Each structure stands twice: as C-alpha cells, then as structure tokens.
Length: 310
Image (cartoon, rainbow, N blue to C red; front, side, top):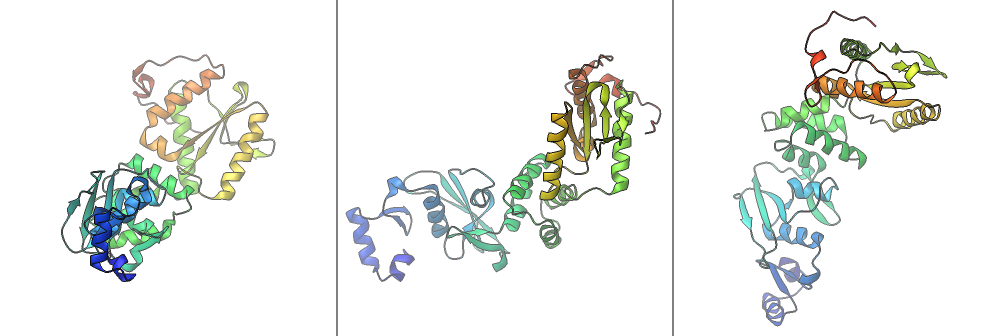
C-alpha cells in the first residue's frame, strides 16, 4: 500500500478500489490490478513487499532470480530483526517464508529486474548449509555459466562466516575449483595408471605426442585416449576452447576422447576405474572381466597391489 500512498493515493481510495474489484489483495497491504495474470515475478515482488521494509528475496528464491534454480510456490524472503514467520497469500497460492537475520549488510543486497534480492555471494552462503557436496558443485557450475562466480571474492567472504552451517563444505568445494599444481597432477596421473593396471587393464602410453599434442594416456591399438583434468571444471574460457578444439581434432582422427577429473577419482576411485575398463572394452579390448561387488565397485580393486611406476 505504501507505494500507492507515496504516489498520492489515499488509504481510503485504496480501500475503495479494493472493494470495487479494481485492486485485489494478495497479502495484507499488498494489491494487484490483475491477479489472474500475476506472474512469478509479480508474486516474488508481492512477497518482498508483504515482509515489510528492507526485505529482499533470499535462499532458493534468490537463486531462482539469479537463474540458478527453478521457480517454486514457496517464496523465501529475508530481513533484519523480527522473527521467522510464514505468510499465506489471500488467494491461497503457495506461501512466503520470512527469515530473520542479525546481519544483512547493504553490500549483500542488490536488485534484479527491480526486485530486491540478496547478492550472489550472500545467496550462496545462505544455501550452503542445506546442500550436499554434489549439489554445491552443480550450483557453482551453473553460477559459472551465468558469469556470477568470483572465486577470490567468495572465498574472502567465507572468512566472515566461520562457524555457520555449510561454510566448511563450501570452502572445501571451492578448493577443488582451483587448478591443481604440477606435482598434484603427476601424483594423480601415477595413481590413475596404477589403479588401471591393477584392475587388469593394458598399460597406456603416458604423455605421448600425437600430431603435436601432448596426450595424458593413450592406447593407440584401441584408438582411445584419456585426458586427466586437475579440477572439476575448466573455468578459463581460453582453456575450454583449446580443449574443445583438441578433442574435436582427435575425434576426427578416429580416437575416442574421455576426460576424468582429479576430484571424481579421489571421491569414487572404484567407479571411475570401472568406467575406464568399460571404455576400453567398448574399443575392442578383451581383457579379464572383473566381477562387480556392487555397482561401480570391482573385486580386482579390493586387493592392494605393488606400486606401479609410470
């Protein structure tokens, strides 16, 4: 209502228009002129207005506004002070969850399409506590595609939120977004080859040159190559372009190109090696078929083997 009164419409006039049907109440003091055509954007703005001064979209609703989540009937709003509460629209569609917070600095609030919303960094911090490691990876990948992710800024901000739920998991997840050092990559390469050989796979050529390109692991007889990436996502656009050109070039030469990341190998080594064996078989290798203990976990990986040297 304050927008109408600020525009010069008296409270009595607002009430009269509501009674006549020209305005329809969505929340207490929040009206729409065309409730049947109220868009998801309109409902988001109505929720912010209903929560009171200085409120803004937050959590999953903020992620939706940042194009990192889908729209949902439940709208999340945050404001300083007060109490956590729920608001029910008069038309019965969805609900509004109002989060109370002690800290909501001006730098943590912005506008997207005219709707007040928590910044991308504050949105990420609010959501981290309810997300798994896999969900955080997907979320950060989406943010990267939307050109929202600034690693250094986000990591600096985490220092202000030490102790908050999810911050440790978020910090560890961000750590895997940095390129690995040369030493880490050599260890990754050695462990990957050693696990493959112990599983019965033929030993690949390591770091051979193919048409001027250095290949991580190559099986020429099977026209198969594996590229080992140091982190889950190549974030540098120049690196992405270079990798894509290399992969297309080798595919046109008849090779099958497959990429594995250090993170997935570290998190689920047995599954990765199982998939690598299946890729070798798809290219004609007829080696021993290890019996799976359960999906993605192979018996030949259970027994430790001697150290393999590249």
